Amino acid sequence: MKLGAENRNKTLLAAALGLLALLMLVRTLTSSTPSAAQASSDTTPTAAQQAQRRQPRSRAARRVAPGKGNAVLAPSADPRLKLDLLKSSEQTEYAGNGRNIFRAEAEPGPIPKPVERVTTEEPQGPPPPPPPPPITLRFFGYASKPGEPKRVFLADGEDVFVAGEGDLVNRRYKVLRIGNNTVEIQDVLNNNTQTLALQPG
Image (cartoon, rainbow, N blue to C red):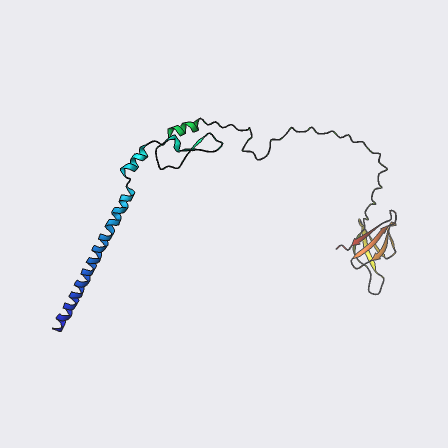
């Protein structure tokens, strides 16, 4: 018996909820129907509005811009094509000033003729003396032992010389100073001094 009472309560509750849902649905449908009808009536033009749209616009509705002869129409919702305005725009002629609108710079002027310059030769003094010839010696090693004065190996072509500071080599070159990796040589004929670096032999 207890089982049947529970089923009865559930059945009554389901029936009450179904009835409530049906009432809500009916109320929603009845409240939205007048607003839809009202909106459709607002968007449908009346016969008077349609007749007014069919009438051609009078010339009084046109506005004329100050200082211009062209007529400018006031905004309108009339979708018809206005042939008289098209004809007036076809008769408009463009009169430019002859300037090329596709070029940013001005037209170039005439090219000036080059001015001929007359050059006069100035008297020159005697040419400067030629530079002294380079020293042809090659420094390629040391010939001294510890405790002795420094001596170096110098070569001129295939000739090899052993010289110390102050010695004359090949009757032309004087050894002025012997450094760690350099030798300072003076060409006594041309008074030219040059430093020779040590070259591996």
